[in-house]
Length: 326
Ligand code: BTN
Image 1 (tube, rainbow, N blue to C red):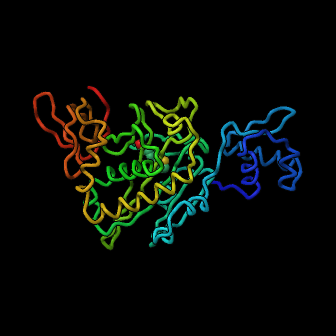
Image 2: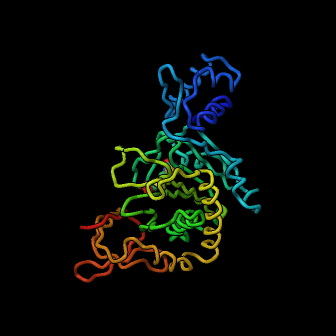
């Protein structure tokens, strides 16, 4: 895992203004030589920063990048007890933000790990989560629940609704739907996903790591992604402020997870029903026990997916991967 040094951050802040800057201009801004700038640019490129060198002109970012940072996220959060509970970890590059949080010792804080890129970003069912530098949000946070993991069914759906609510509070929700168990979709294309991992603790508590990937400013052709996807940029035609979205996400998670802790999934049922992408569609659900096909009937009070197969039999699914059609 790698973190930026102060000079690399300053170079990125200068280049984030959008213009092409020569080595001499950057050198003046930082008070270092052109050779030093060249070395830093080379290191930035090695980290995955999309910086191009234009012959006779200088350096330019191929995408305006405002780095994720704690001060911006905190300043977008209201004064609340949440603020004092958060412990941030930022990386320029890391294998996986979920993995990082799994390996740090337990304590009373809500740890949040964000990275500009992940080299081994993990999706559900062992899939890879494509994580290009600076374009999107790769954010994991670790929360405590005063119960056993078996009492957490419906949590992944609650997290999807929390992501939706976070986008709604920034007016970025138009046309977005939730796909059981925990994807957000827009026009049949995946906008976000989350990977939830749990550690049961000996004292009756459960530590939950919620890893969220949201495609924010990705505009390019990412051929590495196997399924139809979209970004907030596609939805709004505007570059979005990732710090504001992370702040909104943490606030929303705090709100939804507290309500889930107190009353389970039932209070969220209606909200899910209004946004349900699968309801009334023919789907295939893949899980450890095989494939089941049927018409999605919606979900029950525990957040399980209800399917009716071609013989009229009802199936209730607690986990799985869903695809449309048969
Ligand atoms: C999925 O839809 O398959 C889940 C994708 C989860 C991706 C996020 S990005 C931040 C966190 N770190 C990871 O390695 N994965 C999750």
